[in-house]
Image 1 (spheres, rainbow, N blue to C red):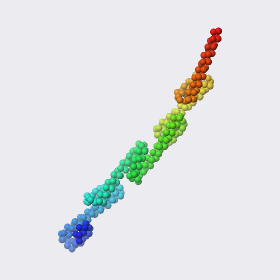
Image 2: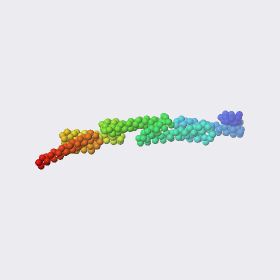
Image 3: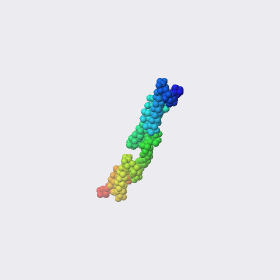
Image 4: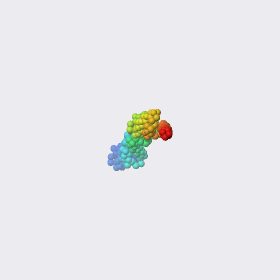
Length: 274
């Protein structure tokens, strides 16, 4: 009976039958040999099952390298054991995935620190496609997504501020830049535009003062000083059409005055010569 069980690979039953037979014939050499063979087979099966259990446990707890080692130990005992092969393959794939996820976590953090938010968001999303519950990646994804949205908002406001500056809307430029700086205090372009608008506003105030002075001189028919004030103002705002118009009018008035003075001088000289 023990021999039949052994032939059918039922080593546990073969061992049991051999032990029962040896109880009656302990000196039976063939039975003892069969019993030793069955015992070794049973122990090997127990070791294999223990190795598989260890592998499954390590996999379930995310200890993939340990799972790989345990599966390889089983394959050393039984190189063609299908479940051990499958577990070893699974552990290897999961280990590689875990390594890739950790690489992506590090890369996303670098992109965040470099303020390359769009690229960082792409990295974090790739990582979450591999492990959607990864706590660090979830936090990075949220932070990067908010940073991208903030960056897009800042880009819109910077464009608006630049357009305002182009049309000399200095107060509007400063207001828009202040919005940018509330969102990102060290935004270099917002500071540049803010500075340019502040300088533009100061320049405009000076031009307005000079223009008012020039108009006063013009009204008082002091065309020389009017032109001096206009020329100083145009040095600050050379494209100011109102100043250019006042300059032309002052030149014309001065030339007319000079011509009239020349005629009067000529007439006076002719009268004296008579």
